[in-house]
Amino acid sequence: MKKVLGSIAALSALGATAAIDHAEAAASEPSTPSETSVAHHTVEADALRVRTGPSTSHGILGLVREGQELEVTGEQQGWYEIDYNGETAYVSKDYVSSTSYTVNVSSLRVRVGPSNAHPVIGYVQKGQEVTVVSELEHWYKINFNGQTAYVGKDYISAGSDSQAETSSPVTVQQDGTYVVDAASLRVRTGAGTYHPIIGGVVEGQALQVTGVENGWYQVTYKGATGYVSSEYVRFVQDGTNVENTVAAAPAAPTTQSLYVDTASLNVRSGAGAQYGVLGSVKQGQKLEVSNEQNGFFQISYNGQTGYVAKAYLSETPVAAAAPAAPTTQSLYVDTASLNVRSGAGSQYGVLGSVKQGQKLEVSNEQNGFFQISYNGQTGYVAKAYLSETPVAAAAPAAPTTQSLYVDTASLNVRSGAGSQYGVLGSVKQGQKLEVSNEQNGFFQISYNGQTGYVAKAYLSETPVAAAAPATPAPAPAPSTAVNTASTAGSNNVAALLSYAKSLVGTPYVWGGTTPSGFDCSGFVYYVYHKFNSSFGRTNTAGYWSSLTKTTNPQPGDLVFFQNTYTAGPSHMGIYLGGGSFIQAGDSGVAISSLSNPYWQQHFLGYAKTN
Image (cartoon, rainbow, N blue to C red):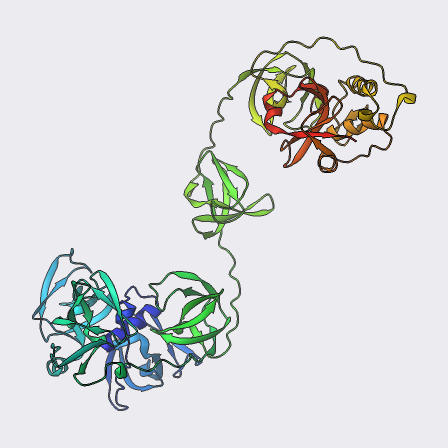
């Protein structure tokens, strides 16, 4: 049975579907065939390299496939010597097993598939030899009357009929103690690896054995009946110190340097192909390996313990693989709008979108996403929303309109959805607008037969009274300027506010600091600099960080807003008192109310200028 288990572990290393429970498999070395004998063995891997000598550093002559029968003429250093196309060649013995297996139960059902749900097509009897082709989960694939069939792997064992008949049966002995003879051993609900696991026992632990079934000991485990493989339990005669029979602690592992000999080799969380993938290493990469188990070496990978298949490692350096050119294909967007992301997953940021029916050149599928080129960048789109056949473009949805009212003295109408676009004209306070298609904080309107855009921040859902015509106050004479408006008395504050109001209607200009055009901080700078020559120019964030904050604002103090067009302090104005302020916004210099929902949402605080 240990020889079979060793072969199964080797299959896992090459990616075959079979994999037995590692805690129940401690592979032993198969017997070495005579130098002059010829034994028939079977390949138990999808594809096995045939080499000119007995190591991975020797040249490759070709491949043999799963189920192929080999004539083994000898063995060297863990490799079988075979006849290959008339030449002497070598294959790793870890991936080749004897073709002779013997039934070890009185009658064994043969099924068309690897489960008890598949129909029975016949029976094999105890002692009958079968030819095993490969293994799937808990089943062996065999040749049965000229067709492929399956039998439970727990009921046949390696060896001929004569070997099976002379092997010693497993019995329960009474004059001693049964102890675990493996680092750890799983306890199951039945006599076979396909039964559920109910716990585990460790090396040296004494067991209460109550029976035997198909090579498994029946034990009492935490008050319940369980089963452990008899291969990993030993019997200690009475009078023998159990503690002295426990194997010595293993020596510290020795490491060696090996090289990856395949384009990409998975690093797994355990010593077998059934374990999860932690990542991969590339062809030619040098690895420090130790602790070979089941055809896998242990390595350190990104601060974790990982395992790589021995079959894909070489003792001599291997050149790195040349990167393969990506294969592209044309696919079509099959949803109204599909996000383009910065990485292959929905957790990555959105770079933009592509529309229904758009043709894309895609490559490099990863995690259900295809790579594309998007506006000069590498982007990724979800495979689930792409079609191999052309898709008609989506019909544009009719825009939904609503009625809103202008809530500022004069609001610029721009040619695009942003303050950087040109001004087509303006609409007045209280004017009713039919708006649609909100973009970047702007609504689309029809303006003098053209498409225009107005800032959402200056619109109200409820009617607004038309503004009374304002008579601009004259600018104060330069001789009235003082060091600070807020400390020179109420007369100077009134003069500053009057002068600020005289600039109502001045257009908005990004970075502007003159009556030909202002931005918000440029407007504040211009007004205060008229009354205090030492008042410096900075941006909104600079003023907010440098001025003294207050919770009791007075006319002439500054009011600040955040997260308007950018994160953090981003807009400012001069507080007029009575819940209103004057500011240079998208519609130019205007007086606004702090009760407007937009300004309430973005309100940051007040600050004094002295």
